[in-house]
Length: 324
Image 1 (cartoon, rainbow, N blue to C red):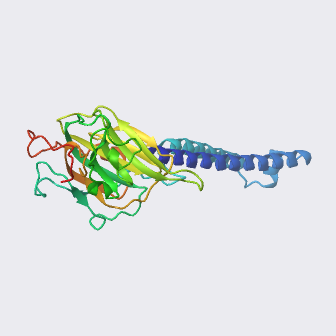
Image 2 (image 1 turned 180 degrees about the vertical axis):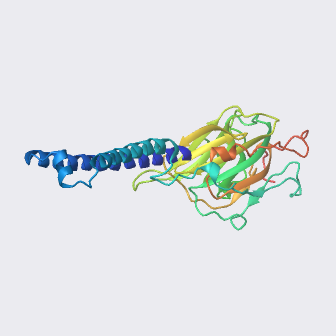
C-alpha cells in the first residue's frame, strides 16, 4: 500500500514535469510563429537576413534548437521510466535500514515458560508515540479451540488497552447470563487497540480495533476482521500493522487480510496483556515484537524463521472459572 502511494506521487511528479515542458514548447512555438509572421509582413527572407548579417549561421541555430528539443523529449521519456531527474526519487521500504523490533515475553523469562499466561507489558517498557501507527509480531501455537460454553465467550490471546479483563471473574453458570453485547461476559475488554482473540465456537482468529469518529457527530466503532481456520498444534507467526486507518494482517509473513477502518484508531492505555482473564485461549504465545512504526510488506516477508517451542507436547491451559 505504501509503495503504491509512492508510485502515485511519482506519477504525479512526472505528469507535472511533462505539463511544464509542453507549456515551454508552446511558448517557444508561439514566439517563432510571431517572428515568422512579422518577417512575412515585412517581406524579409532568410537570405536577406544573411546578407545583412553574414556572421549569423542561421541553419546551425535551427539545428541546435531542434537538438535541444529532441534531447528534452528523450529525457522526459527516460525520466518517466527510471526517475532520472525532474523529481527526487521516492524512498520505498526496501531502501531504508531494517527496522529493529523490541522483543518481549521470550521463552524462559517467566516462571511458567511452558504455559505462560497473565503476561503483561506496561507503557514504561515500550512507550508508543501514536495509537494510529504501529506494528506487532507474535509467535503462536494453538492447542485446542473447542468451547465449553455454547454461548461463548471469545478466547483471549493478546490485547493492548484496558486491564479490566484480567481482573474480571465470570461466576455465572454457562448460559445463565445474557451475552452478545461485546463486553466482559463475552471475554472482551472495555477498550483495545488491537485485540487478538479466537472465535467463540471455531478456530477462526478475530482481530479487534476500537476506533473513534473521524468527524464530529459520527459514532465510535469496535471494528474487526476475521482470519478463518488458523492452524492447530502448529506454530505460526502473526503480524499486524496499523497506519493511515488501514489494518494489515500477516500470517507466516504473508499478507492474508486488510481492512480500511471507518474510524481513527483509539488511543487506549498503552499496556499489553497476554492470555489473561477467565477465557484465555488454549495456546502458547511468545516473542512479542513491537515497532513504533508501520512495516512494509517487503520487510515483514523476511521476519519468519523457524518457531521453537520449549515443549510441543504440552496442553496449554484453556478457559477456567476463575482468574489465576
